[in-house]
Amino acid sequence: MDSYKIADVIEEKYPEPSVHLKNPMQDRLRASMIKFMTEMVPIYVPGVAKNIIGEKSIDFFLATRLQDVGMPLYEYGEKHSPGAFDRAEPFAREITALLEENKSGPFLLGDVVSYADFIWAGILLFFQCLGEEEYKEVLRITGNGEVHTKFLNGLRPWTEKNT
Image (cartoon, helix red, strand yellow):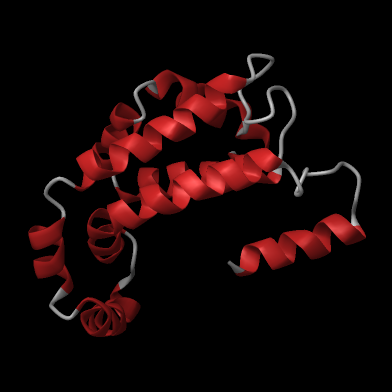
């Protein structure tokens, strides 16, 4: 991911406060997150077309995704989305376990905010943009939605400008 390269440069140029890039928790989150997002592709790719992409870009988006998935995007979603949340659930629960590991605060490192927190927050906020139903289902499959809600609330100083 290019964002990791960007984060490395930012951390090098602005080391204080650190975002704790070289932290084992980030690697653990990333492993679970990649598996989670892989299982969720049939939910979020059609969801982007339905709820996020604007009129000017939708034709291009649908055409390029047709090439990517080999069928019309909405057909792909209908065919592959059943069971996607169930398939993603074990990985969502792994992420919950990571958040519950350090009791000193709501973040992956407890009371210390790290780059890994922004990775997971970005995904949660993305699912909020896809729709309330999708977001609630993501929270449900985590096994403890309250942990993720507290987590996002803790990041409000950085996310409140999210539009």
